[in-house]
Image 1: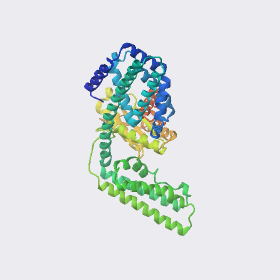
Image 2: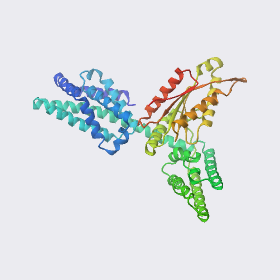
Image 3: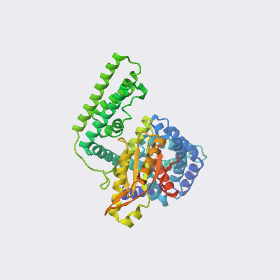
Image 4: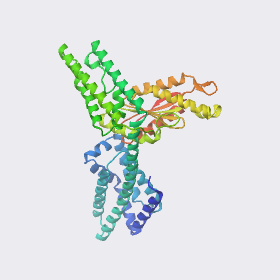
Length: 457
């Protein structure tokens, strides 16, 4: 967030600019804004949508509905008569807006484009009124001052937030490359071999082409597309592996439906070469990596909050670009405070560690696991529909509820979980998805705990 002194300085500069204008002209512009707020909001977004880049951010129906109302409040707010008495709050609001724009990656030029057209439209409305040329010049000057100050603060916050996100993105990339690199290499080589063996078995028993296991949704494919490709971003081998997987699934596997025996051998040989190529490039990527350990919760060894914004933003963009669904599960241990109070914090730590093992065993290679703090965890399930996400959540609930968790001094305890499940619905801000999951978790708690509640859109 922007430094406090910077926000105060911007508030003082805005106040200084406003002091140049009379109360009468401020009242007049306030009335123009209030009278035309709906028209001005529509004008702002219609010009933003002329840019093809804006459609991916503004096409979501809920966004369009909410943004129109929010934009009307923003327009009337920056021209209200009590603006000067609440400038600190108004500046903080522009900071928040700038941070949201950065979080959903709306290009700054789109917002500035909308602001430019907004100023022009307000100036047109002023020119249509029966006021003097001098009053028109003063009024349009006030319009420009307020909109420009708001845009300056938003841009400042946007730049600061983007810089933080870039640092976190790079830190996560390095972390993802280096986490337990030796075992990760062997694990993914094993996953690749497992897919290959499943494919050979399917071919041996004569499965039709549409039933043969594809590599992209395999354990290896999920890991590489959602984690490995980002960890090794920029490396030539990364692109080659992605191309090979796509070629196997979209070109090679379908050919087995039509091929004769001789052709089958040729296709098998090509399949083998593609798999060998993937394995070779994978080894090369791991060889180029260095050890690094950070961003991991000390107690559970799951990811901590540090990389949540990076992972959520990447997954949202990937889902939006590829049309693949994903889900968020917010997982909370029921009555955890009572465990700490009754058995001590050491016992609570044991419960948290054992729950992390349940999470790992329930997840797949491409999924992400976070400990958010205390007894709250987050599972990000990739390439999954609502039915599959619900099945995972219910499986986790049942597994934990049916297990005796070990405590110090040969004691044991049974615990239950409350889970809020939210499916990605196209909204461009991942915080919206997290809030929906949090609301669902709250409902699970209110409805008696030890259950899964699916968030409403």
